[in-house]
Amino acid sequence: MTDLREGLRLSLEEGFVRNAGVGYSNLGCYVWLIDGAEAGLAIHEAGIAFDERRGAQGNRHWKIAETTWMLYDLGRWDEVLEATDRSLAFAGSSTGQLRLVALPYKTQVLVRRGKIAEAAALVEEFVPLARDARDAQVLVPALAVAALVEQARGDLSAAMGFVDEFEQATREFADFHRTHFLDELAPICVEAGELDSVSKVVDSVRMTAGRAGHSLVGAQAVLAEADGEPQAALVLFEEAARRWSEYGNVLGHALALLGSARCLLALGRRAEATPVLHQARDIFARLEAAPAIAEIDALLGDQPATARAAK
Image (tube, rainbow, N blue to C red; front, side):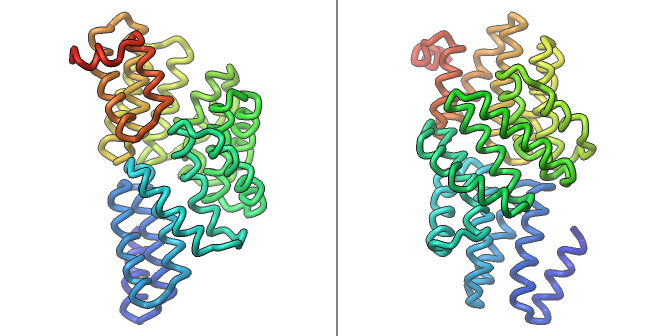
């Protein structure tokens, strides 16, 4: 990270506009993966302002597209949709890589909000393009989000096809990429009863810090729960919830809270599970994540209004 900061400083000092624009992007992405979404977004926003002052529209819209990654983590999902639309408007009819940077994140907002048909249409557009690009930063989210969309459509076979492709395609990628979405893909494998691919990814990861480490802990929690070890899973889910909260991943935090509550219920500790379910539900409500809200309401006994009133 020191080298990235120094490279950006030198580019700014020497007036290398294009290099500085790329430097903001590289530094912002790395800071996001290590320190958190808020810190990474701040660097990207500074870079966008720099590009605007210098008239570097290509660099500017590339970074606008990349902000969807951080905005998604921060739970600012309406802004994800807005940033994607701005990037696509700039890209026009081009099928270049710019459209692939943001589209999977818009798609994940849609599927998490229950807008499955809209999400599925976008998957059909970006997955073939991402495969052709063979770039980790677009291929990884494309395959992962495609799996989530197929799960939402009820086609677990198709979902696992994307998970298996994800595992195979990322074997030579850095842990930053291989762990991205890992805690979200693990539940698909559990639901399908096919744990081989996710277990291979979990076992291969060596990075334990930053976003990669947080996602790894979340996936380990899901696997422990699937193995019928609710106490061990509870410890991992609680760690994942703490990590994601400190890091600034709103969805990850909510999913870990929901996992913790499921484990508490499995351990017969409903009185402890109920407030955790409410906490997770409140987060999902802010995200407008209707499917997750419905799942929690079912765990609360299909009486969400009564349960909330009793808090």
